[in-house]
Amino acid sequence: MTCGSLAGRYISGMRHLLRATAVAGLLVCPAVFLPALSANASVGIGIQADPVRLAGNAHPGGTFTLPDVYVVNTGSQAESISVSVQRMNAAKSGLNVPGSWIQASSVPAQLAPGQAVRIPLRLVTPGDARLGRYASDIVVTGTVQPDAGSPVRFSAAAATGLEFSLVASAPGGYPLWKVWLVVAVLLGAAVTIFGRHTGLRIRIERSNGGARA
Amino acid sequence: MEARVRNTLFVIAGVLVVLFLFSRHQTTAGPSATGDGGTTTGHLSVVPTVRSVTVSPGDVTFGNCTGGDGATDSTQHALGYPNGECSVGNPGVNPSYPITVSYTGIPGAVYVTGANAVPADNGTHWALCTPNQQPGASLPACTGFRGQPGTDQYTLITFAPGVANSTVLGTAAACDTEFDAGGGCVASPPEFHTQVQHEGLLLVGPKSWDDHSTSWTVNVTWTAASGS
Image (cartoon, rainbow over all chains, first blue to last red; front, side, top):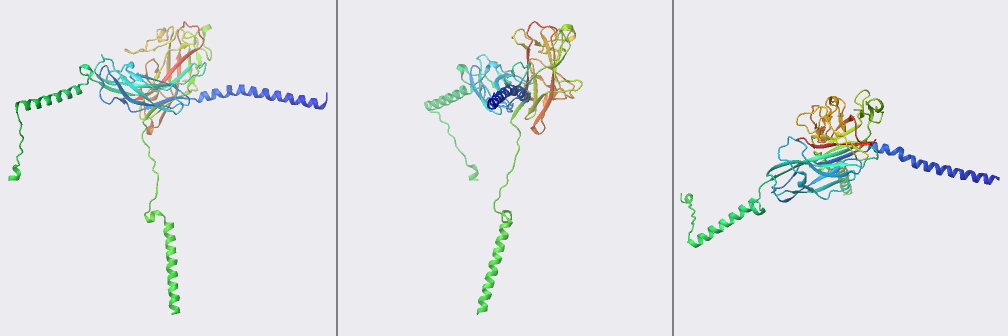
């Protein structure tokens, strides 16, 4: 065996050793560092403090556009978002809003850390809905993809008020104020036509008593 | 004549020197001396318009398991039966409270909600129960011996440093009394910043269970809401 072949075998052995060390390092490093990253990870969600209020009144059997609700991921990981309706405070006055009445659209599948979104909401009331003032909460829950085998998983949720009033609509689905407006216009037209046909005139005179004095 | 011209030149030179010095003085005096425009930046803080809650870490593992009987005694990380106990953190000697719950925003309330424990094979769940059922409470009473959880029942209780009240978790949102030493759940962050609470969890397991899975998952949700 020559000195050159010995040197070649030595270099080849060192290469294998370095390769094995690199592979072992790649395998071990995630195992060492991932739990630390996971341990520092947080889950969090924020929501606008102002309640979601319907502008005007709702009526049974209608669909109404509610103001969008602002939501932000305050955690350190991407979160899945879900929207529900609950009453957080039992002492709150007003009727409970059934969850099926509220439809959230364009809810993102994932919200990145620090990312905010405005979620459009619609109120869909059934025809036999009870009239009155309704008060519940829009609750947005953020959950993270848990580590495999993690036995306790935490979620964060944030709630803001949901308020609207449900008033009766006129037969045919028209709101009462529209009916009253139509009645007033018709009444005015009838009085005008009656006056023209009968020759009835209303004369309005202005007396300027102060000027004479 | 020559002297007059010389004097005139001296006077003109003197005036020029005075004007030069005056102009230098004006320049160094800066805008405030002359009333010329200057800018200043005012910083204004406003009250937050977002209410949020953040929980860290996002997931944990129960440990410090005790209780059980004979062959089914708990081990350090495995719950035994009947009615073994495991915790996240430690309320007793060498206390630790590894869960950090942060509320940020205008004063509000923090609620906490539990859920059924789900086995790995998604078989028979363990339902939450309460050892001391109040009239009208939505959480079912524990059916075991002396208010302990019965078969396929368990209890989850939060604990925190210096707080006498513990919250027994149910599937409906309950006040996180750890946030409010008065027994309510009011969160009042100073200057609308953040109120931080460190908490632990105690789990009391069932008398026995039907599912044969050895791995179970428990979900806990903290909710930030308005106080009224």
